[in-house]
Image (cartoon, rainbow, N blue to C red; front, side, top):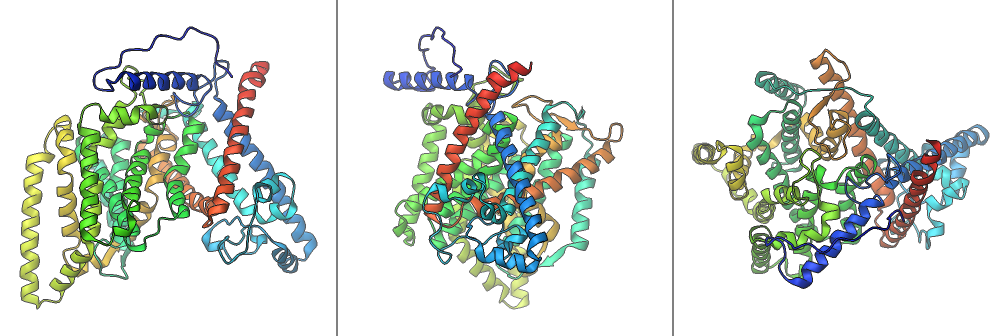
Length: 591
């Protein structure tokens, strides 16, 4: 609607490393032209919703503002009804009556599934709950907007979760876009960097060391702990700009991707659950938070590259096991699948032109340009980030396949007599340390650019060595540090939140977080402590809200998921339309 008449330039000649066939060249040119048009209406470029020509905000931003305003009004009305019902209904008696009348199917959290509507939560919809809504008009959000008091009372907890999430996004915008919070430069001190990490590790060791319920290698607590201590170092690396640890951070990210292959393969191979609800819930977990962060802050998806990268490799694992799933129990068929995955990765990332041919049409979603480097190709960042760990997710699948054999081998070692057990474990320890030293002196010490070249082919070596050392004895497998497990559960939220309420992108959409948020000027360590408390607390709340809203919006019911998705798509179109009107007409009048 906002596209103005102008002369359309001729189709450009594409570089040899993209596509050479004339028909595809014209298709790519057409997609680029569509992307240019999309930028003008705030659909792509400069983040999810570049600013429209007559305003400082995009249609998507104003659409989000409108949506969360409606939610706040509905939540306020629901709280008023709840207060009135408690006052007039005699407390517990009124609550029981409302519970008997409840027909809602939108839950708030799994722990509150049995709570009464008076507590702000409702029962989760499942096969044993009843038929549920049959059409969109029966959905709880539609009934809430129509003023249905039962729907408002029973959806109060869900509305509260949405309202809180909207306020957190507003906090992000205030801290990182308005210029109201000053920023300061980064400085690196190696002693301080490691002192902070070791202090946290010591606290965790002395106060949160816990015993696992299982002796199995790579159990849930162990992998959460692994993610947690890596995430702490990853975040400190960003905060202090510890450039000398670049190669280590590359390894940490490779380990995360390894876990994507390992965890997803383990789930689908054992449980064989390829259902739509499971798939949609997985996509929700990976992309719900980042989707709204992109809309509200006008950032591109790939700015938060961890999210699209894990989404891509999760999709690879899912579809590699979904196709021909009836043959997954046959080792030769599974080996063939792994070989096909390896071959396809090689073709996509290592044969010139193939990557761009596949992903160039998705530039509107996967393109990213740093404002400080405007001349770089929009797909360069995605090619670089996704290519660094292109093989390690496959190695994660291989490790998951051999996990039962690995567990059996460790159990066999544990059952040996003490002298034999010590001898075997000592030999394993010596061999693993020797391999680790060889890898360190051969690859890890390489300069940044040289290391990036060998990283995709060598990252599996230190990952394997760490797994062997971490699970060498039954005692090592049986204990974990709980504080790192807590950090490991919120890695996605801490990764995204750091851009906006811990670090600073200098009020620039798509900007890298090159500055620090300075809440207490002149006191850098006190500022670090206060900002970190705020940042971790908000991340924990986003983690909880993401899970609560996942249960509410993506239940274990295909039909209800379809109805919710249809409603969400319709609401998004309407909200963007309202946002467009606000940007084009309301704001200019106000000016």
